[in-house]
Amino acid sequence: MIYLYITSYRPISGGNYMAKELENKIRNALKEVKAWQRVPTSVNGVYLVKTPADGSNETLMVEINPINERGTPMKRRGLFLKNTSEFNGFGDIFGNEKVLELLGTLENIAGGEKVKEIKAVEI
Image 1 (tube, rainbow, N blue to C red):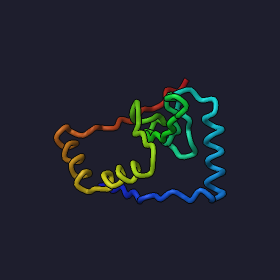
Image 2: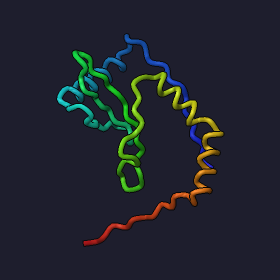
Image 3: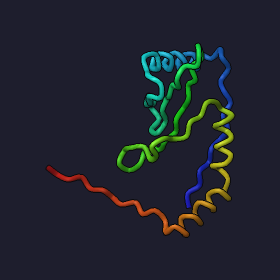
């Protein structure tokens, strides 16, 4: 059985140089991006996403969509998060042993998803 532990995150204060550097990198990366376009990050399965502008406001989100054994996202759309409180809320649920037990039971009922290894065709 695999356990997932997610710790709470508290944002770094605005005066931190590293936080400002990351903020500038994000601003530059999203400058020419269209709405809903994924911008990959250095963390596999984590993307930056800019939503359509509502007046002068744009919402920036993080999409979490783990990569499968073929190197593609597991789902068509991942989990979208706008702030650290959403991250912490989902982390609490993902870290709950009862949810993991529930999913294991559902896999047993449904027969579990068998992951087939797909071998490359040599040309």
